[in-house]
Image (tube, rainbow, N blue to C red; front, side, top):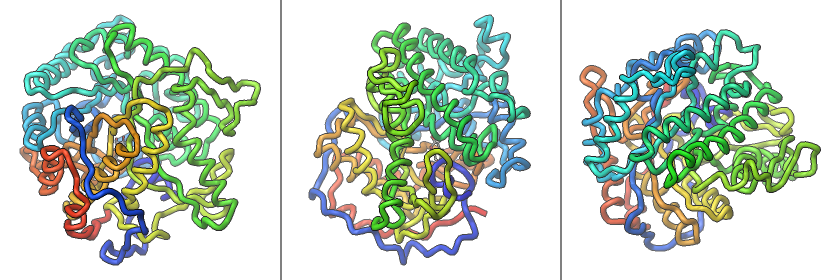
Length: 496
Ligand code: BGC
């Protein structure tokens, strides 16, 4: 089930017969401009998510899943998320880390179950004031440091009173209308409390990855495999919940700028000369990259995911959905190979996603994901068609030894600047991640941080590649000759 590891988030792969990155040649790519530049006021930052960097989010489905999943999914590490960077106790260190890297923005998420740990506390609107104060303090300190916050309202984890991992056969989490209803209330309450200090809001992080991990690949709660009908119910609920959350935020924070964070990829046909592979790749691309955006930007509702708006439950221009994006948040990590016949067949979508990425000669990350900067430009061109401002809400690499991150950053930022020259209205870039963190099913093995964490002291330890990122931020440009002069990609260190 390795194909979804590159598609969602799961264990580092180990046993593949991998080529070293020294042997890997980049795909032939068109030559871009000699230099790309970023405008004044462009937001430069890093991202994290509450469950991945905080301690004590045990009253969430992920809190339970992290303990149980090793027995439920072979992809799970069994690592304890509480052993991570303990971000709420190290706010000053994180702010210093942001500043030292020249950044002026920070994306983080509020953990719903930290603020409302029980159903009774939610129903009575009696938040846990320790949790509220921790987030208020973080926001005040960011403000004092002139760092623009971007707040995510749901980054994968749900409170356990809405998502019971011991009952995977019952409707779970987003499948229940109650989850959406409470989520919308959560959005409104947070916007009311913190709206004066926050302008940039992300409703749901990667709604389709939640569904892929939970209902297709099985490494996320509720741990189900290839359960397409339930996957679609959850995805549709998230789209409608996003639209209502958008309204709830705006009702409480009139100057809010709201998006969800869309994980967008390129999808390459395994054999471009086989028409079935080409059409299979296009079907997956549509469902993964477009279906949700079409719903919440244009109000075009494709109820049966067939890329047509002619079914009994389909609708175009639905006023309950249309226009519920002030900007588009893009998370970009790379490419997925798709075939019609080979790999694991996904029912309904009628396409197979190739189990591992090795058929390409592209360099690999520690996660065995292909490094494909050109794909960043491709998805930006696609998303620019929605004619909304874009912010890169995540982009980064698992690279424990930091022998790839500098080149990865430079190549991706070059592609970003080039896409902006072609017309993509990009307003900011958030690197994933500020610090090494709990990488969901894969635990602490993959290292995405600009900063490593000392396991004992929790000190933030700067990686060398920070200098490359800071150089781009300070100069506001990337020169092609500087990218070419960087050392080639190092050898990945696969987990396990
Ligand atoms: C998620 C992050 C995750 C990152 C790297 C993104 O899909 O939003 O939570 O850590 O990918 O796998």
